[in-house]
Length: 250
Image 1 (cartoon, helix red, strand yellow):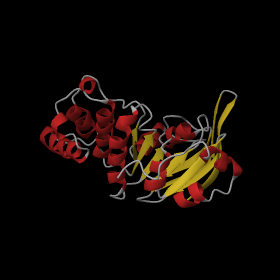
Image 2 (spheres, helix red, strand yellow; image 1 turned 30 degrees about the vertical axis):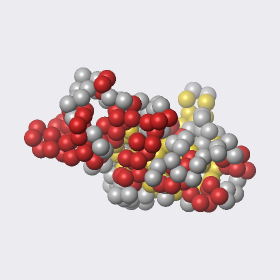
Image 3 (cartoon, one colour; image 1 turned 45 degrees about the vertical axis):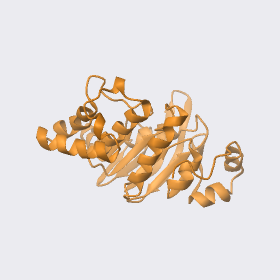
Image 4 (spheres, helix red, strand yellow; image 1 turned 180 degrees about the horizontal axis):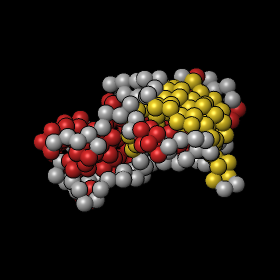
């Protein structure tokens, strides 16, 4: 579903990504963990060319793009393969929850209004917000806004959903409601790549965990291998900072 080969990215003199290689299978949930500044979010943003890599090849679905030589048409096609959920929701403030979801259906999918509304309402129900269809973002809690953003991502039926620390802007008591929604989506075998600081969530929901540090993949494997039997000292030191419970969601 997703394959990244020899991905590099620098910002001026700062090397952010150094030769990243990853593969994500269809229906797989991959959690990317690591210290701040390790390149996790940059990697995610490179997958849909929100950040332009210096070099490397990205394959998503049927689209392959080489960072050394590409067209804007190829970038557009690549972006059609995924949907992104941001840290700070990125909802349209002047549109209701339902309108935020139907916008892409009307413009990208060319759906009729009635069909788009029906799809949007079903997605709001899926994330537990049926009663908030007519509400504007300013009236919603952070957790509710993020759930609308997740519903919006699902609306376009992407090959994969990219989630960039989806709970980092939330108050602690709102984290579980968003993680519960993501878990439910994962159980439907939706391909997802999640950058997260929620170690217990990564352990519980991910099929594969990637640990990054200093712009490189240090270690990757099944959650039990990474959390219980890390082989790299850098991974061990990082995980020792966390005394996460076994589960943050039921």
